[in-house]
Structures are given as C-alpha cells and as structure tokens.
Length: 493
Image 1: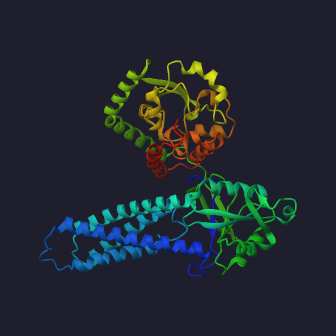
Image 2: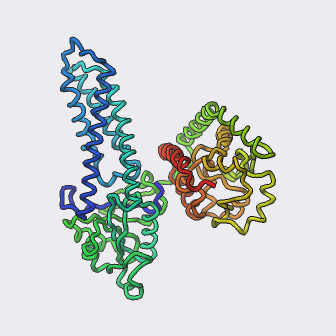
Image 3: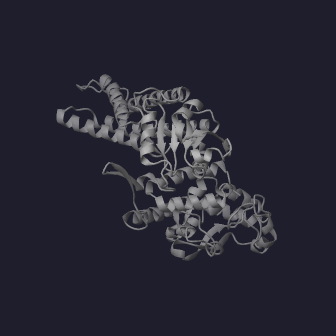
C-alpha cells in the first residue's frame, strides 16, 4: 500500500510452464502447500463447529440429507472455489489486500451458488448449518491468511523467507530509486541481486550502483538474469527501453521461467486508481483523479463520528485514570491544547494529554540544536521536557486519546495525515501543501510505518500517498495495523 513504485507483472510463461528460480519456486510451492493445508484445517473445523452448533450431539433425526457426505463435500467445494478465484496465485500472496478480497469473494460466491443450487434442486440442507459454516469459515480463512502472512513477513525481513530475486533494468537514477523502494519494504518479497544499465553508461559507471552489482547492459538482459540466478526482471524507466525493445525482451524471456515486471513512472499511485485500456494495440494506463468529496467522504465522516463517540464512552474509565496519574505526577493541567492546521488550512485546537512540563515551549529554543530529525519537525529521543508518566503515555500513544473529541467535532478523522503545526505549514511548498486537502488523522500511514523513526521526506511521502489514494478499506487496514504499531512501540518518543 505504501510503495512508491507500481510493479506491473507481465507473464513470460504460462502458469504451468517451467519453474523460474528453482530455490525461490521451491519456497513458493512450500508456502502454497502450507496454505492449502491451513485452509483445509480451518474449513474442516468451521464445518464441524457448525454441525455441533446446529445439531448438538444428536443425529439430525428424520433428515434425508447425509451430512456425513455434505460436510466434506462443502469443504472440497470451498477449496475448489479458492483455487478457481486464484487465491493461491503467487502474484497476490504475501502482500497487498487483493489476497483477502479474493478469499472473501470465493467464499461469498460459493455461498450464493450453494443457496441457488439448493433452491433449484429443492434440497433441504439446514440453513443454520450452512450459515454458521460460511460465517466461521470466511472469518477463519481471513485470520489464517493474516497469520500466515505475518510469519512470511518475519521470515522475509530476516532474509529467510520466499522472496523473488530481482534483476533491475533501467538508467542509473531510476534503478537506484526502485532499489530503495523495494528495500524499504523487504517483507514484500523482492530481493535485488543485480542491475543492468544502458550501454553508454556501462563504461563510466563503476561495477556497482551503491551496493548493487552492475551485471550487464541492455544487450544481454536474459543472459545476466541467468548468470546471477534472478527469477524476476524488473524494468524501470529509461529512454533506451522503447516499446519495441521491451516487447522483444518479453519474447526473449519466454520459456525461461523468468518473470518480467514493469515499474511505470507513476509514483505513489495506488492500484484502484489505475486501469489498463487497450487502444490500437497499445496498453494505455488510465489514472483516475483522486476523490476529495462525494458519498464516500460522507460515509467516512459518519463512521468517524460514530466510532469516536463509541470509543469515548467505552474508554471513559481509562481516561479518568490517566487524568489522575498526570495530576499526581507533575503540576499543570491534565490536557494540552495546541493549535494545528486542518483541512483547507483551517486552524483548530488539538487535544492531548499533557506529557511535558508546563514550560516546555520556553525550553524548546535551548534544545533546538539537539533535534534528531530532518525537515520541519522537532523530535528528540530523550527529551528532558517529557514527564515520567508522559513517557509511558507516549510509548503506548495514550496521550492522543483526547483527539477523539476532535474527531467527534469533525476537525479530524480517525485516519489521515499527521496534523501539522502552523509554523510547519508556513514553510510548505506546493507539493507538501496537498496534505491539507483532507482532514488530519489520529493515525495514518506514518503511524504504522515507524512514527518518529521516519525521516521528514518519508513522512511526507506517506501522507501524500494517503491523500491521493485513500479508501474506506485502506482506513480499516491502517486502524488494524495501528494496534500492532502501538504494541510494538517502535518510533514512539
């Protein structure tokens, strides 16, 4: 969701063709086989629990339906539905939301098919049994896929998981940019092992671009991929890579088992806004404009206010305990109100629990030289202005809970860019100012991607990505990931 470069896969061989990269393909097959076993286990348990919940320990007396055959048949049909909707496709496994969407679609389509078939054939299978089976099975599959993905991500981050070995092709600047992007998210499963650059640059450039070995020029891309054991060729921008040359490269890779992916020069544009339309034999990429108003925005606002109202009611005892702890820890008010800039450049007062001494602003000038971040923000890991209870609140992000009031008032959203200070906004250029097109959020991509550990540039990049590509589904994903980021505590200071 946060990648700055869109990788568009282009199959150079049929799915049943020869394996590409024996070691990588073996890891891939092992992961897919593990998923099949996991899905089978989840579905079997769902069906058994549904049977027990519907019929208990008693046999469904008088029924002509042989549930001893219906149950395994349902599990088998479910697995077939997952296969048909390509829920085991290597291009969606381990990264992105498409895997979850396909699993849900496979379950819903099977449920609809079973309901229609049962009605037409007038088969009296218990609706309670089917309803419980599909409800438990669908949720179980999603949870199991999430757990499997997290385990894969941890293995990939350690360099021990199934990853594609990538040969990056393009001019030097775009190669370095793509390498940086892929390495920023190692859990995506793209391990750069080499680069090919234009013939004219091959002699002046050293044998390495950073720490990436230059293994050849555009004249011998297939040979270079074979020599370094790459199973994926990632082509990025270059004036020498014309459409004709790229098409011939695809032909050259046919039957080799090496996948070809293309990274168009569309930075920070998400998949849902991109559509490929063939025109006169050319695959034209159509980029839709971002959506800043309309029905989806209205729904987002309603969800924000309803969720914040519910959360404030639920968390009232915790808020009272935190307020008492702040009062006992140091002198000063419990709440800290600071002017921030919201949607459209409108200023508002953001509420937070006080985590610093009362004269924190006056001490800032003395600490300016010890700023540990670049850009326009001040961040200091061991800030002496933070109180004892304040460090605890910051670690678990509890100091931000009063911002639920800002969400309820419509000044903020649950998910959005970080709310900036007026002093920061005064120094914004034209690009950064796009952060103000949407409401700021209590959490966002910056929150789930490292918080204070992020550089100014990366923080802005994530905020702008959200502004351009927000969606309700993405908001739910970010909210879910926020819990993990808070528990992990990385970048909270």
